[in-house]
Image 1 (cartoon, rainbow, N blue to C red):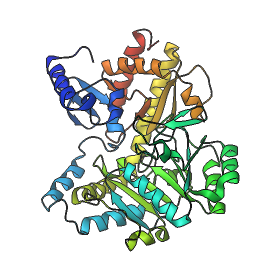
Image 2 (image 1 turned 90 degrees about the horizontal axis):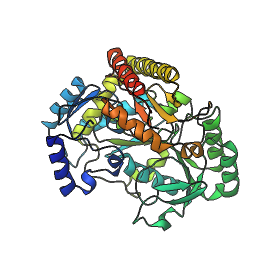
Image 3 (image 1 turned 30 degrees about the vertical axis):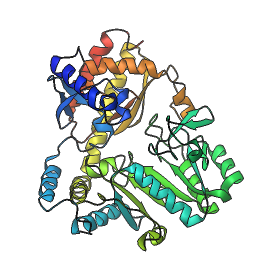
Image 4 (image 1 turned 90 degrees about the vertical axis):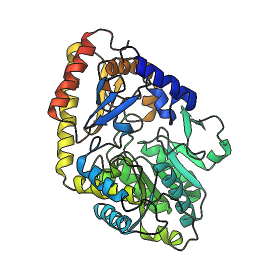
Amino acid sequence: MNGVTTIQGNLQERAMRVLPGGVNSNTRLLNPHLIVERASGCRLWGVDGTEYLDYLLGQGPNFLGYGPPRVVEKIVAAQHDGIIYAATHRREIEAAERVLGVLPWADQLRFGSSSSEMIQAALRIARNATGRRNVLRFHGHYHGWFDNVQIRSEGDRVLPGSLGQVSDALDPMLTVEWNDVEAFTAALRDHGDTIAAVVMEPMMLNAGAIVPADGYLQHVRDLCTRHGIVLIFDETISGFRVALGGAAERFGVTPDLAVYGKAMAAGWPCAALVGRGELFSDVAVGALTHAGTFNGNTIATAAVLASLDELEDRSVYRHVESMGTALIDGLTALLRHHDVPLKLQGLPMAFHARFDSGTEPLTRYAQVQALDGERYGRFATKLIDAGIWVAYRGIWYVSAAHTRADVDETITRFDAVLSGGDAGA
C-alpha cells in the first residue's frame, strides 16, 4: 500500500484497540494490515479504494472466487429456512452424499466447522481403532493450532509452536522429514507397533508447494497397511482444489481418513472428516465423541451443495489449470528477462515463490527452512504496493474467477515491480 489513508488508518487504530494485534487470526499478522471493504471475483478493494488482484484468496477457500452468484443464491435461500436445528436435515444428507460421490474410496463422513477440529476427531478415531497412542507426522506440515499438533521445527528438533502450549501434549508425536522414504521406513521399523496414525498433507502446500516424490505416497500407504496404522490425509488445502477428488485422486493413493475444508464450501466455514465406514462405528453409537453446535448447519451444507454443482463440471479445473499455467509461464519469463533468482514451483492452482539461486526444485522441508524468507517478504510488499495481493509465506492461489485478462494484468504489474529495481534485496 502506498501510504495509509485517513480511513484506513482510523480503522486500523480502532482494530488495534479491540482486537489483539488488530486481527482475528495470527496468520494475518504476517501480511501488512489491509482493511478490506469488499471483494468480488478475483479482486478485493481496501477501504481507501485501492484495488488488488488477489492470489491469497482468503488463504485458499475462495477457489470459485469471491461471491460466485449461484453459490450466493443458494446460501441466501437456505438462511430463510433457519440455520441450526439441533437435528438432521435434508441438506446435510444430500451434501454428504454428494461429497462421498466424488470420493469413491470413502463410505461416511461427519461435517464440522473447521479443519483443525476435524483433525482432532481423526486422531481420536485412529487411536480408538488401533488401541495405540502415538502419531507420526512430518516437519513443515500444518494440522491446526491445538496443543497436540502445533509444532516448530528447528532442524530435526521439534518444539512447541506457541507460548502457553502444553509441551507434554506433543509427547505422542513422532516427527520425520516428508518425502524421505528411508526416514519413514526407519520410523515405522522402530515404532510401528506404537503408532495409531500417520497424518500428512499429501501435497505439502503450507510450505513450499512440494509434490510427493514418485512412489512416496504409495510407499507410505503400503507400510501403514502392513503395520495396521490409520493413514490420514489432511486435504484442507488440496481437497477440491488440486482435483475434484483432491490429492487422493490426483496422485492415485487413498487414505483411511481425510479432512477437507476451504474449497469444499466456496469460502463458507465448513469442514468434513471422511473415511472408511468401520472407523466410524463407535462414533455412530455415541461411544466415541464428536460434537458441535454448528456442525452440518443449513448454510454450510447449502454452500457445499452449491460448490459441488460448480466443481462437478470439471471445466472449472481445466480453466484454473489454464490460467495458472499462463500465470506461471508469464512470471517465469519476466524473472528470466530481469535476471531475478525467484523460482516458482507447484501446480497451476497452487504454487510457491521463493528466492533461490539453485536450479533444482524443493523436495524437503529442510530446504524450505533454508530460504531467504525475509527477502521474499520485502518483495511481497512491493507486489502488494503494485496491487497484487499475495501471501508473505510465498504461496499463490489461482481461482476459477481469474480470467486471461486478469493474468495479463498481473504480469504487467509484476513486470513494473521488477523494472523498479532491487526485487526485495
